[in-house]
Image (tube, rainbow, N blue to C red; front, side, top):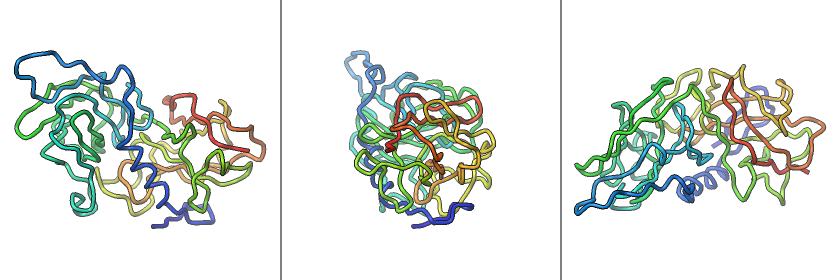
Length: 281
């Protein structure tokens, strides 16, 4: 699947990075404080998790999330089986709301699911929610876990990483890496989660087929070692094709750029966590 980026002269291939991100979404190592200790009782079979074990899927941090953000629940007894959404469970080009008898309910709305297992669920915060405190619970074949609160902001930018670098591609769709770094002045594609509402609106869990720019695009900056890139270099900031809950930024890198700079994305007051480099030579 290809899509244009508006002012960018070339279309952006997407297939290679979908594979990387699909792997990433089912291969997390949970942060040390995210795996909750379940109280020991004689019949401890209900799903168990806490507010502190619900994290941003890209950053794996326990921070505020946002509508249309990919998130992860770590816990115990979350599912009986390990199942990822696939061709048989994606109906009408929309992620399922039930996998292996498991559902996630956010403020009364069934969330779309990427992956379930006994200790981990990857799901999408419903698009139609707004900033504020929301309540989440997991239901598994007639048994429910606790109702726990989490905080939503309007945006919660987070960068995915692979082998220590930001997940981004060259225009030919190949992964930017230590062996295939980006160059000064090059147009690259960065994959991001948590950039919030778009224009036009999307449907929660729907696999994207057309461009939709984020509402907060005028408040968006790409920071390299803390310095903002020129606004004219942001060629597209919006939904990415072929996936749900994923965004892409088509960025023209500055003509002068340091080696392997830290990349952060800022949308209004919210900034992605520090410490992730972009492979550049």
